[in-house]
Image 1: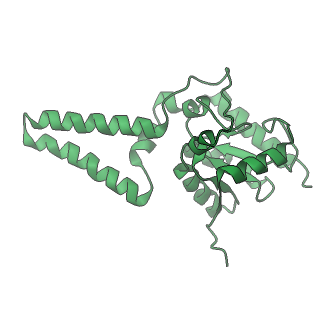
Image 2: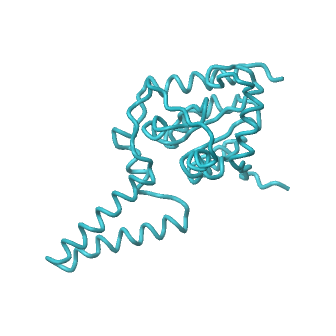
Image 3: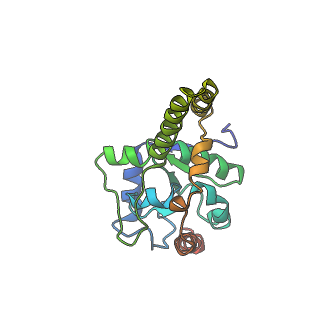
Length: 213
């Protein structure tokens, strides 16, 4: 028996084949055909603007709750969740499964998609592109460690700051979560513009209203 909170992981080639077959050269962002595989990008708007799967709708992971009503109305088994590397999309799939929504995750994320030689869209109307969340976390964590080590020359107690970050990174790897990423995602440059979020939610609502075939 399949566990109630399990989800399917597609590799890049499988996802590309399904997207190619489902869209049939149609822009899946605007299509209301229920046979179209809906792609949900849970990265920040800046990451999304830097390059996303064709037709992907951007609903950041921390705003996923606002999309639950529309996602419940989508045809089952036709939702693919993506992020940069696959970690956030797996977390999103677990959240969706807890609400009875079937979803798949893209193994390797958009990074794997690009390494596979597949196209990423970078629309000119999107918000300004920013660093990936993984890169933001590495920069922030590294900066804090350096500050802790530098201040530790003045007083050894400051070295606890660096030790705390190191411990946090170990816990992040073990638990496959990242508190620092959650905090960074709330910074203004990582937040979606209300109009962009509303447009993505409206597109999801149109998909859910399409007749099931």
